[in-house]
Amino acid sequence: AQRVTQPEKLLSVFKGAPVELKCNYSYSGSPELFWYVQYSRQRLQLLLRHISRESIKGFTADLNKGETSFHLKKPFAQEEDSAMYYCALSGDYILTGGGNKLTFGTGTQLKVEL
Amino acid sequence: DAGVTQSPTHLIKTRGQQVTLRCSPKSGHDTVSWYQQALGQGPQFIFQYYEEEERQRGNFPDRFSGHQFPNYSSELNVNALLLGDSALYLCASERRGIGHEQFFGPGTRLTVL
Image (cartoon, rainbow over all chains, first blue to last red; front, top):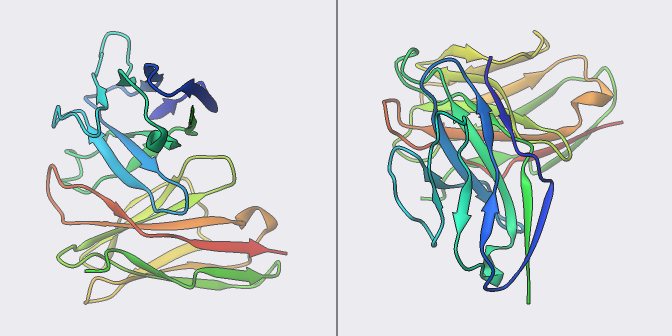
């Protein structure tokens, strides 16, 4: 079974402070991990995925298979980073020949205060 | 390209009724997935359609069914509505193949009274 855990419902930081949103997963095979973001009144959109190893809007995430974690980090928070962040896993991707079947965590609301 | 579109935006039904939600995928996409997002929760996978067939299914009862049309658009049907079916229903589309991103629609808010 696939499971994604985001332990914090709400994370409040000051502008310019570092941000770390935690994500732990449970999956027996080789997972593909994602971070999705939902800004106020906007649709869910992909922020980054571990296989691309990109930095998007200053955010990075490293897959740690030993700790089964995929924490999202940013060195200096900006006001526009305030949003709901979801960690997601697609584990059966390759076995089914394609087609993401995403398992989401419950989300962390990030609030950046001035 | 408007991206993934869904209709209607909001819907109110009573217990026992049936509902149909609609989704048009992003241009160039051939695979459609449906998710249910209850208040305060992350989206939960319902099922996925490709080539007009259900390819994968999550832990949802048979009351939840779907369809995909030749133009790749899709419908989600829910029969015998329960109060617990009240949620935001999200449609997502992608182009079949490894490494492709799933794009989400704005959702349909279903309220069951």
